[in-house]
Image (cartoon, rainbow, N blue to C red):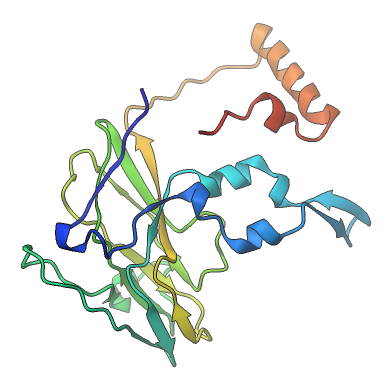
Length: 234
């Protein structure tokens, strides 16, 4: 049976908030427009670009993207917005699409960099995972083009089913000026099973044969992984 992840929001905001999006439907324009092949100055030959790399694409297209709740204007290091949400029954729920962290919270870690702003993207969707699964929240996969870096966290969302997880981030592009549009992906989420154990072995007997066959498939022609091993996507 397929697993189900459930997103819930205040009913008064159901038609206002942008919804989490299957990541396969939120691929960036640069990926769609980039060439499949390019000339390498280093080796003097044409090579296949990451557009033809299934693991690269599948990382970007799996899971769900959590959206920015409202348009954010950025100018001279200041962040502002004009967003008027209607009242909701939940009186303790704040209504700001963006919050701040103080830089001291990163003291002693490589995250502490002078001049960088520490943000918290607000999320108004409570996320429920299937029993036995946690949810990994991280920066949108392979998206260094975004002017921020979302930090990575893991939430036991099969227990924490009706709370809100917000997304801390470091604002990286100090020269950015303009609008960060509503719906911009600010976090990427994946289901992670908790009950996983490791086993170790050696490539002998039948495993050795399968290993050699796999090497042959991958070396004989481009696209071996995609044609023989990649799971069918729904």
